[in-house]
Length: 238
Image 1: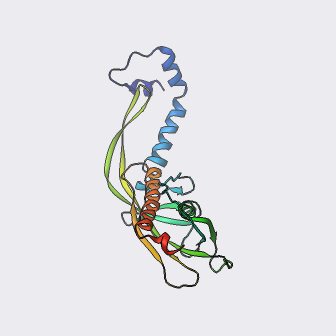
Image 2: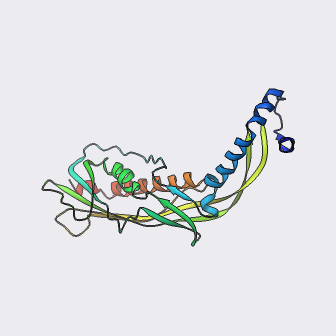
Image 3: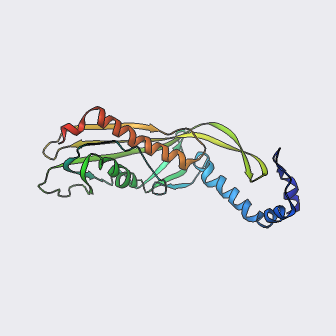
């Protein structure tokens, strides 16, 4: 314990710290070490380095909400096909499967896409393939998720500290999360899509896989909404 404490380096320009502060740090040293180790392993760059599991449900996605004057009276039925949207997807890192997994992938459909479509439709409902939709005016939305992957850009050093105490630098992998998916929207009486969208959405670059995943999902929804508006799809499905 004493050896660890003497190795800690005070940040330059920090006022002297009294003995009670060192007593507090010394008392919580084991817990602090655990937080640092677990935080670095699980959130800093675990998926960039090797096996880990991350849930879409745990990622708070908040895409931009468009201003829509008049919503369609049709009900938007999102068809959630388990063969097209698996609930668990292995994540490759630069094309290599290192054991990383994204779970609860269908949350992207039931939560994020449903919320996005609610900006344009009075009612949004998630249904199973072949489920009856009734006689009321509706649109069907088919969704697919092809893959999730990480592209490592390089390494970056970051300071690891707690208050005025510095524990040195830690090297983290920096990368981008890539989410490949698509959807098609059609009227029930037609087999042709009135609108289709597909892309490989890239996140912002970062070292935290949670932030990268959130960025990719938010950009995916935002890009879909942008294309939906630019192609005036709302006018086609009134």
